[in-house]
Amino acid sequence: MSNPMRQTKQQAEQQPALVRGIGLGNAIALNVNNMIGVGPFITLPLVILAMHGPQAILGWILGAVLAVCDGLVWAELGAAMPEAGGSYAFLRRIYGADKAGRWIAFLYIWQLTFSAPLSIASGCVGLAQYAGYLFPVLRRIDFAYQLPLEIPFAGSFHVAILLGPATLVAMGSCALAVALLYRNIRSVGGVSQWLLVGVLLTLGAMIFAGMTHFHAHLAFAFPPGAFHLSTAFLEGLGAAMLITTYDYWGAYNICFLGGEVRSPGRTIPRSILWSIVLVAALYLLMNISVLGVIPWQDLVGRAGAEERLSVAAVFMQRIYGTLAGQGIALLVIWTAFASVYSLLLGYSRVPYAAALDGNYFRIFARVHPKYKFPNLSLLLLGGLAMLFCTLQLTDLVAALVIIRILLQFLLQQVGLIVLRFTQPDLPRPFRVWLYPLPPLLACAGFLYILLERPAFQREIFYAVVLVLVGSAIYLVRAFVQKEWPFAARPTVAQPD
Image 1: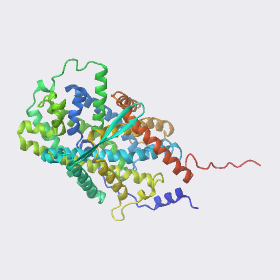
Image 2: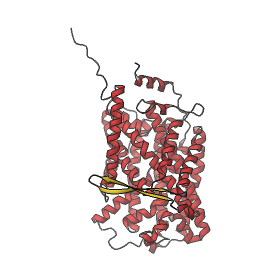
Image 3: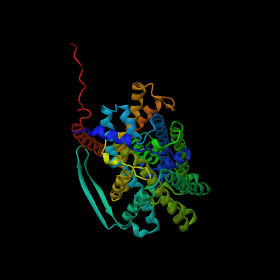
C-alpha cells in the first residue's frame, strides 16, 4: 500500500506556484478592510455599555497597544516565513514540522474551520443590521429558538437562532463576496483598493461631522468614580478590551497571503504596522466624535437598544437629518462588505496550505485550473459563514475572540520566543522591536481579556471542546497515516 503522506507531498510538488502579485498598497488595503469592517460601527456603543461611560476610550487605547505588540510578532513571523497559510505555517515550524507542531498546526486549522466563518458571519450580520435602518421590515424576526446548553462549572445558557429577512441579506452578502473572489488574484487586489475608498469615506464623514459639531462637555462627561480601580472597573475594562481586540484584528491578514506577496520581507512588516497606526488613529477620532454628539447615557440600557444597532446612522441623523443617516448607513454597508471580502480572501488560503502539507483533508490542496487560487477552500468557508448568519452578533464575537486567543494568539506569542531559542539562524528580514517586551505584553493582555470578565468560563469551554474533538480527529488520522506520534522510529544499526 502506498504512503498517503508521500502521495500528498508529491501532489504538492506538482501544484502550480501561487502568483506573487500583491504589493504594499494592496496589502495595506486588504489589512485595513479586514480591520475596520462593520466592527466599530456596531461595537462602539457596546464598549461604552461595558464601562458605563466615556472612560470606554481607555478600552480603545489599550486595545491599540495590544494590537501593536501582537502586530510586531506577526511582522517578524510573516517576514521570516512568507508562505500561504499564515499561522498554520508559523505554528508548524515553531513546534516541529514532524513533531508536536504537526498536531498544534492541525488544531489551528480545525478551530479555524469554525472561527473563520464566525468572523465572516459577524460582518454579514452587522451589514444586515444597518440594512435594517434603511428598511425597518428587515428587522422582523420570523423564527426564534433559544438552544439550551449546560456547561460544567459555568452553568446553563442559551444560543439564540434567529431567522428573518435580515438573515437572507446577511447570507446574500456572503454569497456575493464568494462570487467576486472567484477570480485571478491580481483582479482581487484591485477590487480591495476600490473597497477601501468606501471604508475611508465612511470614517472620514463621521469624523468630520463629529469634529464640526463637537461638544466637549458631552465627550468627557465622566460619571463619579469613573477611573476607580474596583472589581467592576477591571471586569468592565476586560469586557471592553475583548470587543476592541475584535475590532483591531486583521492587520495580519496579509500573512495568510504570504505566498502571493511581492518582496514579502519588506511588504509584510510595513503593511501590518502602517495598518495598525492608521486604523487606531481613525478609531480614536471616530469614538471621540460620536461621544461629542450623542450623550453616552443615550447608548446604555434598554432605551438605547435601537440606537446601538445602527449608531453611525443615528449619529449622522442627529446632525444632518434623515437623509444623512441613510447615506452613512449605505457607507457602513459598503464597509462591512469590504471586511467580509478581505476575510474570505485571507482565510481561504489557510486550509489550502495545510492540505498541501498533508496535514488536512487533501481535497483542499486543489487550485482553480485557470485562475490558480484555492477554490474549494473558499467555497467551504463561505458556505459555513452563511450557516452561521443565523446566530446573534454578540454570540459570534464572544466565541470568536476567546477561541482565537487560546488556540492561536497565545501560541504565537510564546512561539516567537521559542523560535528565537531553537532556530537562532533563521533569516529574519524584520525583528520585533524591544524584544522580548512586545510578546510578553501581548500574552499578559490576552490573559487579562480571558480571565477578567464575567462568566469567562463559558467561552473557554468552547475552546476546550474544540481542542478535545480536534485532537481525537488528529490522532485517528495520525494513526492511520503513521504520523507523529505514531510514526515509525528509524532503526539504529547495531555494531557487530
